[in-house]
Amino acid sequence: MNFSLTDSQLAIQHRARDFAQTRVAPIAREMDERGSMPLDLVREMGALGLLGGPLPKEYGGEAWDAVSLALCYEELGRVDSSVRGFMTVHTSLVSQCILAWGTDEQKKSILPKLARGEWIGCYCLTEPNAGSDAASMETTAVQDGDSFVLNGEKIWITNGGVADIAIVFASADRSLKHKGICAFLVETNTPGFNREKMPGHELGHRASDHASIQFENMRVPQSALLGKAGEGFKVAMSALDHGRLGVSAGALGVAQACLDASVAFARARRQFGQRIGDFEMIQAVIANMAADVDAARMLVYRAAWLKDTGARVTRETSIAKLFATEAAVRAASEAVLLHGGRGYSNEYPVERYYRDIKGLQIYEGTSHIQRIVIARDVIGKEN
Ligand code: CAA
Image 1: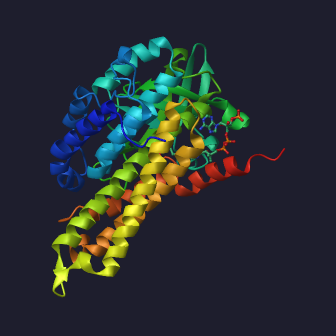
Image 2: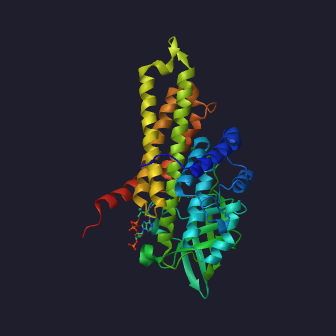
Image 3: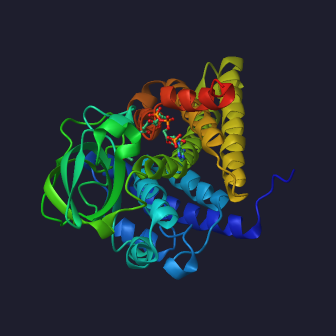
């Protein structure tokens, strides 16, 4: 077993860290307060080679391995979950999904634009009545000659308000349940594609763009199908294998950021005549956090490393997402407490980590759903 990173992985980690620390960290609080991220950051990430990282060179990428991509998400997650979340949807749920399922024509025409950040991608699965039970979606796709007509509603679509291209899931035959679902590549300027901001004010991830999207007699050509008709659920689930690894790496970044902030505070803050880090109760908190961060890192890197061997890593990815997000929830909660009154204010970033991390435990499959995926694989089907 070799736990060290290669030179190329280290170079990617440093590139992502440099961008995160110099370009994102200084504006993270302002983005959170304003409720949006500047789209200039997207172009910069494209120009730096981050957005297309895992794509082959012919589509504008750098053919990163999965460990490198996880390192990039970890560095972004250490600084800001909204920017990391933007990239996970754009690169993992959308670009990697098109790479896996697209025709040559679809890949050639769409992936270079996504790699450059010239186009933004979103992934439209969740509906008002189909969240965890994604296969029960109510959006319909009716074949009409050589096109499909889509009607329905999607909610909580990250990047949905700013996206140029959407992967849209709809059922061509609801009686077939998941086997009736189709995936479509839809340009968001298609007539009948209507979007608006999600109502309400999110707990965290406030700089993310979350949209509600309505399809009203939206006509798309047969050539918009991603994968074959009826394969849409597999397209969706395989995309989530990419996305969930990204979320778990982002959660690892949040946990690391909580540890870094707690250690710095425990060294600097003095009470009762000594550093608070010299009290055993504080030491126990920091030791638990450090152990959690290490365990999360091992699980995230293990899933990424296994993915690079070509294996299907659904179970390992769900284990990584479950553990890393829950470890980061614990770390953020303890970090706020350890900072005392200061942790309760956005003067210190732990307050934002605490609000943001709850989202990672929910989207791309809640912790409950990850437990279902893991348990089904561990116990197996009845013969
Ligand atoms: N890769 C490929 N195929 C897969 C797969 C995977 N990871 N997981 C399942 N499948 C296949 C199965 O093999 C099965 O195929 P067959 O019919 O050929 O046997 C088929 O899909 C159906 O699988 P299940 O019977 O397991 O399906 P289910 O209806 O019981 O659902 C579930 C399983 C795990 C609960 C799934 O519905 C799920 O993951 N739900 C959560 C959805 C989710 O994560 N939503 C978040 C959306 S994205 C988001 O958060 C917002 C955003 O903007 C990004």
